[in-house]
Length: 74
Image (tube, rainbow, N blue to C red; front, side):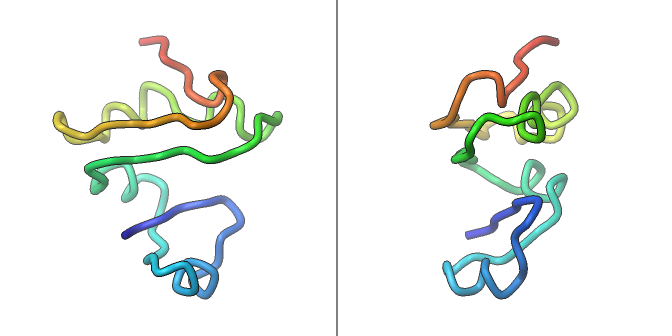
C-alpha cells in the first residue's frame, strides 16, 4: 500500500502499513485511490486535471470526502 499526505511522515505511513510516496507517484502508481480529507482552503481542488492525467486508464478514484476536493472540470 502506498500513501501521500501533505503532512504525513515516512514513520506515520510505515506505522499504518504504507509506504510514503510523492503525490505524483501516488497518482501514477495507484490502481485504486481513495480520498479521506476534510474540506478546507488547503484541500479544495486538491485533485484536478493534472492528477487525472497521471492516473492509469484502469485506475479508480473514490472520494469519500467533500466533493470540492476533486475538481472534475477538464
